[in-house]
Length: 591
Image (cartoon, rainbow, N blue to C red; front, side, top):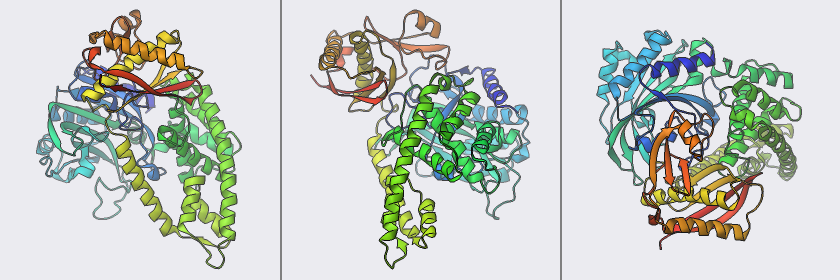
């Protein structure tokens, strides 16, 4: 089965069941500091899962590009990826568990023709938050599934969300396909990661809202959020052993073979898969219209880590210079018919990869000098201390195995256990810091967030007025304390320009204008000169927020109903974040 065929089968199946197809959102979440990347198809839909009316109705379907790095150390096996595509269908207060499970089962059995005996399912076993999901169990049994095909797990396996610190969440039922391998042990079950079972579908029943204190409250609107692993289904339909053996990866792998002269086989599969996965992820992040660049913070840090990890393995295979950009060319060619932004941003992708390769080359060279000094100063101990090994990792990008290889060449070893302890401590600190930093998000509909969200519209309008309309929004990030707005512009704004922008925003606030939301088609929005129409990103109908005569934008986030409620607007900082992209941080103060 071709990738294009699978996408069409899925979309058509749900459109025939009254689901409206919606567009594919950016990998960089709009107005949401709770996560760095879009991690699931539901992420852009959070306001609607919380009760806002979606302009295309209560039943939706799409496929969404996603990126997760929580399992980055697992990349290299048969199924784990950082970038992936997720097919999904949603019910916003319409159907619930029974209808959702029946449709999923029908698609697998009747459309994809997967034998029912290969399928296992899991359900939430219950805890102090919510009871065992016996309703789902009952439906699966009605559909002909035996007790031995139904498994019960806790929150770690069968509870989804929220996407950030707070938000909608609930129990889920997951669907697994038996890949025909032998069980790794007598206790081998679908939750096992040995590769016997592929999880391909997750039906999340969003019944709860988790607040900042960790409490769970029942949602007024019950929703269904499903996610189908596109690459995993394609693997099953083509009867291959891993996602890397599908048409999505074979052209990338073939290019790596040509560049390195090293064959893709069992001994090299791990390195090949990391390079292929990380290069695909990096290409999509760089190819996003939000213009993320490699850096040492936030999305840029993740991007740099992916690029450097791929580069390391390419270097081990003696790949020539600019190999990463040559691999990216293949990815752009293979995907641009589905994701035209890759072709639109091709020059940016290639330039950034070549630049990062040169920067990393200098970093590696400096790291080798430091490593040699560490080894020369070991004296009689013959063991590189954990702190030194971790410094080589954290500062110079040396993975543990790289330092161990270097140590062996000099007849010494590395305190690997100590390194792993430091690495774990580093991860825990990073997670704790992220939990503090990325609070709020789309699920935060507090008064402060609504005000800042509305103020972003006013800022966009003021910038267009002061800079003669010569800007395009490249990103927006809002929490309860400040707004952050990225836009295309090729120079630093003057103090006079910033003062003028502030003055215009505060003038609109003082005029106490009603904020009006209207539903309309994309064509109607274009005719009215709406800001924010980006190609295929939207579905047939959109929400347009009007603050006339100053601003008219497509948007899905929460807003106040009158500009007079915003307070006083103040710009805190204006800076560059990439070539041709500026950033403004601003806040609202009470009058």
